[in-house]
Length: 110
View (cartoon, rainbow, N blue to C red):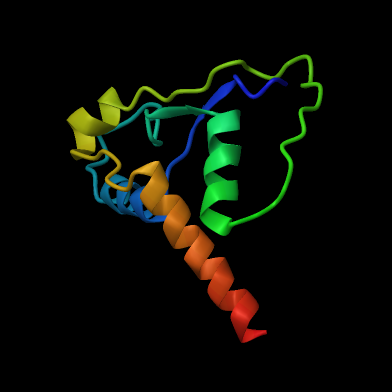
């Protein structure tokens, strides 16, 4: 792709909180519930953020997308908000910083 396809990224702590709330719901709560972060970012934005946060000298390379790859992914979390009072709290920059720090710690320990 050209990096313009969008995705929504949700930090694991937010998803764990959603699952805990979902498991505590009464049995009459049924149906599909989207969990995720409705904030959209392009793949190019994500790549640029990762490069900036890691100090990488990596070059961004664009590759053809699979024919069935969606151009946009953004969950509708309105049912989760209404039913379990949940929405993600961790912004993309914060989640990426935590993830980079985690893997940096692993690399330094080895």
